[in-house]
Image (cartoon, rainbow, N blue to C red; front, side):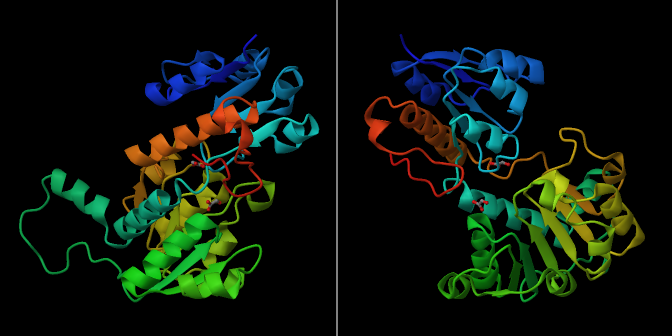
Length: 331
Ligand code: GLV
Ligand code: GLV
């Protein structure tokens, strides 16, 4: 009687196939927008599920899933999971940290630079046929090198962004976090801890990399935006709900903020029409970890986590990657 595992979205067939060595696998073949009722239905009778940020694993679905023992989230953020409800039932929940850190830090830098140097705006302008003659003052942006980089949320990804800024671009790096990092990490990242208001006031380029929760909902609101430099950029690669998008659109339209780069949105895949109407915002479709190698590593880690969590195969002796800690499922 093999455990039953649901895989909510297509990952990579050759990686998902490994689950078939141990489990009855219900693998989704096409990208699917599962409703909450459908998620609940799929979890009913399942022993485990590999899910993505698309699937909300809420208290009701968990209550109806009597045999559920493990959820492997394919991603590092896990605000889609009701962690308290999972814990109360003793259901193991895992995520995929570490394997996506450097790729996501690369993306943060790509976005920051695109906002500062008006890359996507310039491309749209060119494609519209408006480049009729080179001119001295076209598309003037802000500098990245030597400027002040602000990082809100100094986890692994934040530290990767800090290292890039300090060591690659000679930036002064400031960060704010729930707790201050040990001196060794601060010096390795060449980053200085400051309070939230100082971070807002001093950053030329502010990057959001903190987890989303009710406590961090709209941490960037109109009051926070008002404290930023009018020449600053804002980059969000974490979760859309961290930013009050209407307030951000007003700041960008009113010239209180130079530009923004957003990979995540509060109502994604829908994007606030006020943002879509602005020229000074770079928009990407939640693709921070989207390199082929990293997405393969994420799928592999999620599969390993499920095998370990349900106590099967050579992974059985390895603890899975618990969402509260560092990765431990070794390959
Ligand atoms: C994607 O946003 C992730 O959390 O991995
Ligand atoms: C998670 O928050 C990370 O930075 O890896």
